[in-house]
Image (tube, rainbow, N blue to C red; front, side, top):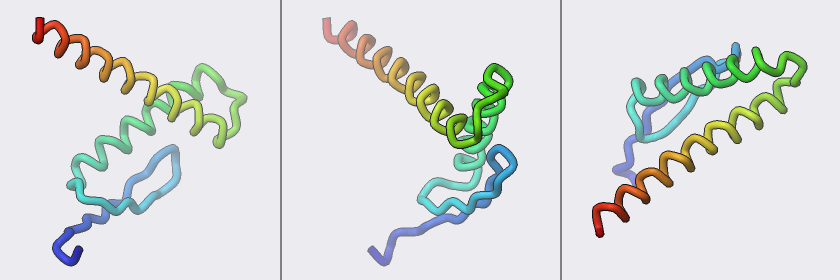
Length: 83
């Protein structure tokens, strides 16, 4: 896959720097990183005694929960359109 172009973007999430490699442009990757950082800080405020590892897992679960809800909404709309 010599034609695949990989972009490298350095982001900061919860005080840690990460160099991410992928096909998306830097703006997209930075937006995702900001969303993750914001969610971690939101959850930390509600759960100040969680260690960072548990906070990261809780963040992933919460963000996937939101994603599943959005996917369900899309499916429901598709079903409504097919009627």
